[in-house]
Length: 154
Image (cartoon, rainbow, N blue to C red; front, side):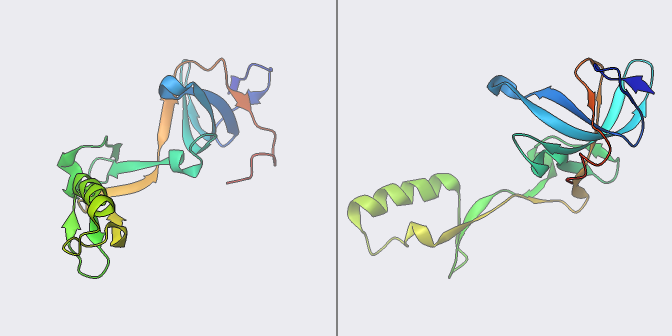
């Protein structure tokens, strides 16, 4: 068991709220469920973030190792692109930008309407899955145990 800054004890299975740095934009509140506690660290499964919602609770995982992977072309089978809705023609975001610039200036009949393209996200190799992840932190001074029933929003 550990104790939050208000004196409440928390342990595995309890929901906690803590503040996390959010780049140069300040911080965000994170709702998590405690997985384990040892003398100096807390490991928790991220459930939701105040700035990024439920998307902050999911990351890409290498199913062969069970570890999180950062964005890298190494894990991408096919890079993100734009595909024409009718023809399937694929172009990069830079090409789409250039076409939009040209299309609005010239209204050329030789260029397909750039508004007819839709975004296709990165396609990862089969071993890459998207799922919840655990995070371990050493500074636990800002942890607040959520009272039972209040944090049942996930």
